[in-house]
Amino acid sequence: MPTPEQRDGLRQTVVRYRATKPMLFIDFWNDGPMISGCLAGGRKYFHVNANGDIEPCVFCHFAVDNIRRTTIHEALASPFFQNIRAKQGEHDNLLRPCMLIDQPAAGRELFASEGAYPTHEGADEIFTGLADRMDDYSRSYADCRYGPGRRVQGVPGNDEENRNESMNVLLVNPHSSSVFNTFGLSLPPIGLLYVAASLEHDTPKAVVRDLAADGERLDDGDIRRADLVGISADTTRAGKALSIARSVATIGRPVVMGCPHPQFMAADIFAGGYVDYIVKGEGELVFPSF
Image 1 (spheres, helix red, strand yellow):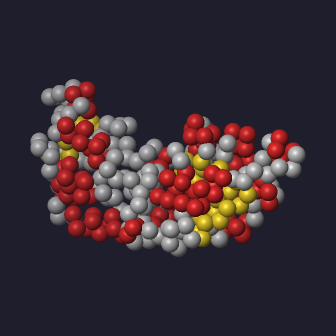
Image 2 (cartoon, one colour):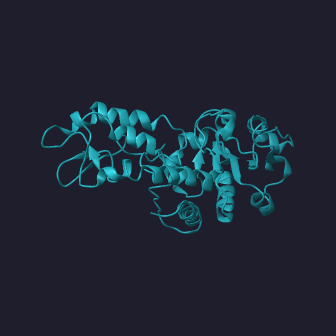
């Protein structure tokens, strides 16, 4: 299995390739933010092995049902699969959603469910003999990618011990061609200012760049100094926002996009390959989670 550093290297490489190559890349491990976490347990898919065992995932080799004993519909509605889907909603780090390697305690709890059995010899080893190593791996990846205990997620969180005060955040308001700018009126990017204010306790280095007032171009130096770049994108400025996202992704910084347009047009936004996350809801509530 790749080391935590190799896994994060894969994530960064995919981000770079999506920004520079006309190809579709799918990263099973690191695309959790795009599909709101883990797919397993019938949330988006499940796996039936050659013996008919109905497994939560192609990598999760345990089950309680078999297609020779029950229907698919009954299996998906079983307490076992319902519990898996409930567990998926209990952790909020969308880059660490896997019940085997990211949340191993949840995997062990599910494996201990009534009626659960390993679907081949040795399948239970990951929950028994390898349990300590899986816990170590999970912690190591969390520390490697985010600093000790750091969370990257899509819902609000306020756990004090998970704060990371070293992150530099750049918030960008794209240039607008609205009627206000035509008459020389520049409205402050109040939404981004709210987001910046929400980060003051966690990230004292949040910087807002208002391109509507400062000029259309974002300086590469600003991007390189940032660990994370947030871009506001209403429909009239979606093209400009994506152009900025392309520049940011080329430099290798993760991109977060917010405002109604990306929320309603998420598939189109993600299809470009330049945006890593879309904030749903109020940015000042969600953004501190990053």
